[in-house]
Image (cartoon, rainbow, N blue to C red; front, side):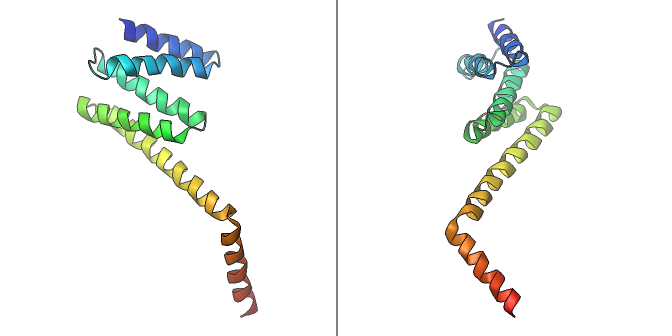
Length: 125
């Protein structure tokens, strides 16, 4: 029953805009349930919400960690709907991580100089 209460606390705090408190309650579920899950569905949803909320906070590493745990849990439970949700969310986080790396590359001054040189080559040809 504790897992359901923590999950409902997290939903309430999220609805009030207190994301940090919501994450705290969801992490408590992860700490207590990872070794002896009593409610697979709520545990899986708490992992999904942890991934989603961390993504909203810009914490891509934690987001990926929890979404990957969600994917593994959904796979073990055998729920196709949860597995589809996990795949979509993992794809989004991987795409976001790739985009961040691309932006870092674009913002690199050496890369910018390289692009200018290439652009000059094409313009002058």
